Length: 262
Image (cartoon, rainbow, N blue to C red):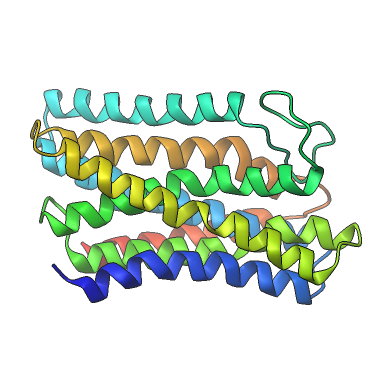
């Protein structure tokens, strides 16, 4: 067991999320073009990470045949369905929307924004936990690939951390309050990663196809939240082509990292 790599993988994405919150609390980034570019970058990283670090290893584990395709499809659909359920049940609010989503609640707008970012981080954290477990079990995942996946999450977590704080800064919230709420939002990913590790450890011994299902489910959840939340948020307002350029840059950087990690 590589405890040094384990700690790096657990801490790096969390530090990036909280670091993004700290940056947003101290700098001015109040134009749709800048925000769109950052969120587009995050979306591109998540899509590429889902393909190269989750779906392709899942297909390789199942043997690249018809039965394997069905297993990976099942996992992908389970991941999408899980995020759809969370989206419908958990109270949250997006940057560019006036009304909150999910079940009715009495939460304040800042807390609803924090919850929205936490929802983004749950599938990423679960995916990170599954990737760590796959590397620990030597199940279609090398530690190099796992580290590159963690670095990719860290890259896209910086703009996500900024996204939770920027709207609050623009409405006049204090730096101290923004940093506190950014810290709360950043905890979702490592907590979800621990759940992913425990879930994989419990289920992996039951069937040889559990790991591909978990990998593809994590991919489905990440792609769902990207298409449902990140891409629309990146395209909101007068963004020009910044969101598109950000997406392409993030996608290609993570694609190259996925190839190098393979």
